[in-house]
Image (cartoon, rainbow, N blue to C red):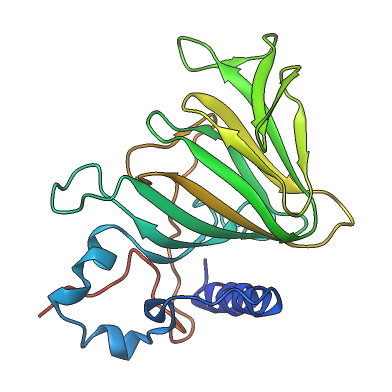
Length: 227
């Protein structure tokens, strides 16, 4: 991705958050220059990849494949220094964007429509060899109500609604055409984007960045080490 695309995506998500009166923690507003001065007191943010996360899955088509995220809080599966067992994210998805089919080996999560349009979440069970089970019925829980749906069903979530995604449950998501951009919440067990994403098709997770302008905010993979 070009840095200018990332900067535009950051500002667009900030505008959506302002529209829905969702206040961000201070570290989400740090400039690159401020990050250069932050010491070890901010290691939890660095080590647990809190903050901004703009992804095109390495495919270079952000408006079709990708979306914008913020990790607000997170523990760490690989570092005993951090004892949180939970995570929280915000996600911003525009019409035409797509988050590809995947599951998590460890993480259980609730995906919540916080406002805007309607999100469509397609679900499949996984087989023992981690393929898509295209025949088996899928048990899903939508705000505490159990539903049994055919494989490949797109569960439709309007603002205020949520779905629980269990480990090994394949899911993707996109915005219903004509409904407008969506602000999503995610409440989950610890999040680990390095080792806990099983994508059905081979994609990356973090973008390669072409520096065509100065960064507006640093992404969660870009923080300088504490000095």
